[in-house]
Length: 488
Ligand code: TNX
Image 1 (cartoon, rainbow, N blue to C red):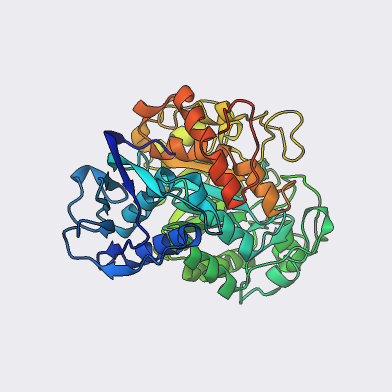
Image 2: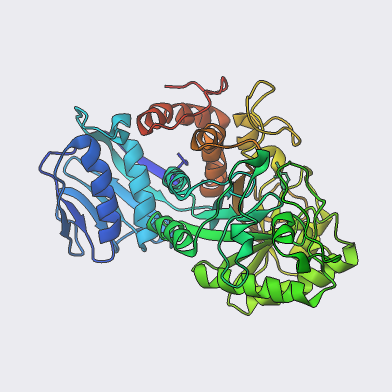
């Protein structure tokens, strides 16, 4: 999970990890080898020393090599060979090896995920997998604005989404209810704007050091962080922090409800552009990844002509820092210009969208997050205790049953950069809530992003998904036991 591109089982062949095994790592693969060793030591209790490998596999143990892979693996894929004597993962990049390690985990018994030593034996089926992703962007989004989620929760979510070869984490860092990242040039954004959340709890924000800690943890899981500052709407927390950002010069109170579409930066004031430019400058400096997300959704409190003027002025503030603009698909409005390598994120309910078509005709790429399929904050059914239902109920089969490459009319697969599963947190307060809403739907979206469409098959998917249950239990993940899935 996700289904590999090609699998050739070797019938009757198995490999059993001996207690004396060594992990051999090519130079450039030692980080991944260390990650694998840490993971396997916990449940096997074996020493599993990491040694430097040459270019050819040593014939025993587990090898992670950066040469000799089938060319089909590309930049992010891997080749995994399991014989009676050894396990060898080959890739063209450390990211490819990391993805191969996720597959290796799933070939071992579920108890390999346990935090304490388990009896084994640690046996895997023999064969060859040659695997690579369908799409380059496989994302998850966490809204840390409606309810603040501390660094430890974000790190744990990163560890969980990495299991399914997700490679982007989009952090929704600002909204009406909270501003969650320290900005030196506008300090009240965090100290005042970050001081509450939906329902009126204490909120919180990330210092720059904490944000960098998240970025670094993500990088150790081969995940790139996409930070979002939502504008010109969804900005009450900023407007409350600085009176001058309001057209009437009056700061509104902080907001702890769940309405949308009532706030707007003052698009006719020059100070607004100084503000946005400084915020994006500081954010770009904290972001090694290629994208800055500028939001742009539900700006109903901004007149349409001013919306376009605003986005047209903001986009160059992103590209001048060497980043590409990402935004919700409303930035596809025809009065808004294209900007280099722009990404529009589709979150609508329909299978055709004029704004997306306009953006694509000008060269934009699309990340697919249709709310009635990919939103992890939608309830599973009418009795789900948390979540929203404005886009409908989203059971596992609904989350799985669509093709991101052929979903929107007029948007060919070649214009689709990938998929993203957003988790809005109006009702999602704890790490446990995040797990319950993400599992099992996140793996469904991850498979749509990774696996070739030729492998798409609900009957196979639900069986493979059911087999993940004991792994989640061993990992302490509290998941929704969908009646659509035969849980192992
Ligand atoms: C719509 S989707 C929103 C968010 C809400 C979400 C709740 C989008 C771009 N905007 O502001 O949190 O619905 O599901």
